[in-house]
Length: 263
Image (cartoon, rainbow, N blue to C red):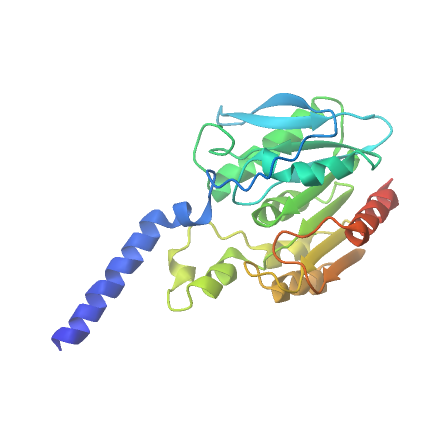
């Protein structure tokens, strides 16, 4: 009996610790895998002011706002804007403008990340672009990993040109269950990012990209998101990509073709 009570006490303590520190486990603003890539595309460092008065760092590349669509890039749960340079460099070869923002608490920004907070950050970026004269139809939403949870939230207005989801998850609850199968995450989790529910509300062109050997977000999640997405929808599934997909010729061909189809 004492042994059973001990197990219950330890398990309860683990649940309490996970509940208190869950956002530290989900968001990793200090993790930096920057490999020293140099920006090959001109950017302007801009300040995005959120609805709750936080200043966010953004990188803005303006090619031609009147002629080309503008990508709004929502990055994942770890690292800085510099970690995405290798992707942004490829955008210079596409007929697009782009804005990438760093989440609250990331890249030196004020605040602490949360689901509600990231939605505010994303909406503030959209408002910033609208103040430049852009409409939703001029904007392509691009979500990477955790950023897919933000992109699907924003895309539900159905006014945007298109939606790109790179390594999307079905929901944060299911993603967390993959790492903590013996924890009642559905009861404990604060930030749920329910992509599989929201994707059904989206009726703009969608491109889903995912690698089969993803060790963080299982491939079946991205495939499921694609299967339940409404038409028109497109996919780029690869056999050997892990969570950070390689921007190789095949991916770039698919991405360029998708963007071109929206113009």
